[in-house]
Length: 241
Image 1 (cartoon, one colour):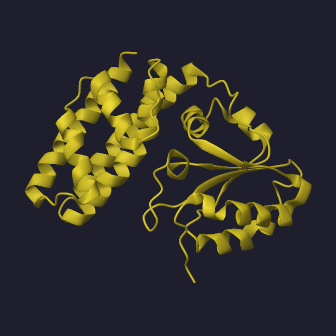
Image 2: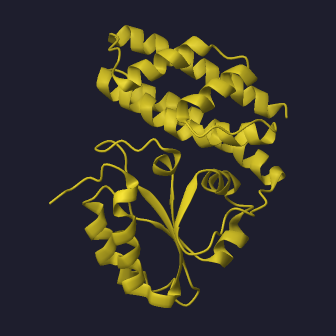
């Protein structure tokens, strides 16, 4: 039976107990990250995301955790990101955007803190930011061509796109030594000011995503065109950094 927690806190104790029962002293840290850690979890719409730090000897025995992931999937918990301390250390230059956002938005629910003192390599962050901005811009254009005829599919595309760009915009704010907001909407507001974007475009996007407005298809196309133009401006800004 699928039972969705009203808040992430409801499941912390049981979730930790299951992992401790399975891995014992080989379990080092469990932390919530993503929308749940930012205070933006919405039952029925959001998944809860955790990362689990295991010992080096346990990382290759993940089959032991398969029953846990199946059990907790029914409670809106995504399969966790399972890593070791060494993996974190060795991967900062490969995934600086991901680790920056995890560092910024996480709650440790078991074990020691492993992200707080991470030094994010700014050079690698800048390179990944440029690449990921351009990749996501291409996906947005491709998605419009593939989904643009159906209004609800286009709305879904825009919703996923906003979520995909949030960690990238957070990285840009970090590189510009700007404050790093917790909420999705606040990140886009800050980027609009920083890059001199059309704030009204993002305002309308969030109204559409929330269901507050339901524009006709032609209006959705126009809004998507405006949105793509704003992302292009951000990409050009990063190109010049």
